[in-house]
Length: 254
Image (cartoon, rainbow, N blue to C red):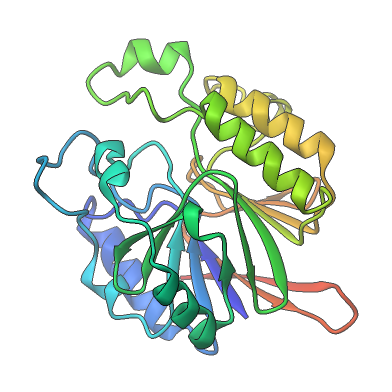
């Protein structure tokens, strides 16, 4: 069984960090934790020589943690993260059964890994496509020039990596993890939110693939939407692969 959360926003909001810490300690039988972006809240806040600022309660978890980027991470820090070594990738597989494409896996700390856009992960009976990036269109850039980062949206290179992963996996995954959602979903469910190229790319992905569950964050909502799409904020989603090929998905408060 794996667990999925989103928008930890460390170190912002001490009360939220306490809820996260207490809730995660209660989870049992977990093979790995996945975070759908905004793991940290350090936009343009880290000095060049500093490492990524991570919560100690996450570092102490007895299973590996994987995260994609949202719009609150410091992208300069993400770019400096080292690639996971082949030997560490093999050790990770032995411990958790998690098969990763090494060139798309960066090490933030022991047991904590950043999965670049278009990463594919196979773990505990699941095949997963992970796509970070956020809804950061013209309005957002104009209204928040102090915190907007040019790397928040998916680039052409990111799009090529995503398309390559789709092709190599026959456009079929059990789980899709993103930070934001396809353009048509933003328009229908979050009409006050800005749109960007990331939403357009995700819409292309959505029309192209077969999946069982799609999990996302960004909108600070806890809701199950049509098309088996699930927004996470204060909830954790527990997912277990079943013998018949289905997935048991349980939403639970942290």
